[in-house]
Amino acid sequence: MKHILALIIKFAVIAIVLEVVLGYLTDLSAMNILYVALAVTLVAYLIGAGCRRMVLS
Image 1: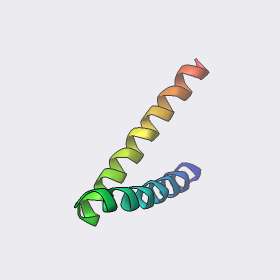
Image 2 (image 1 turned 180 degrees about the horizontal axis):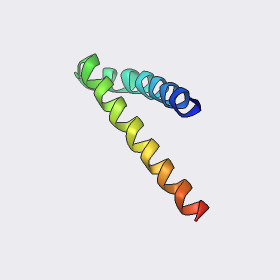
Image 3 (image 1 turned 45 degrees about the horizontal axis):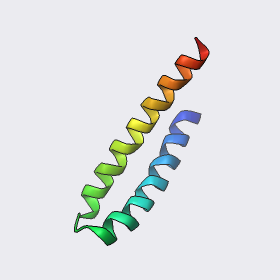
């Protein structure tokens, strides 16, 4: 449950930052920015999980 809550918070923060930055600099729609935020969140989670495995082994 902790992982789900952390992912939701991470997604929300990333989405807000990307909405401000990409919304100002590009003409991307809000839905496209949410897709980018989702992709960034998943990649960040996978990189973090991989780093934890390397440290623990």
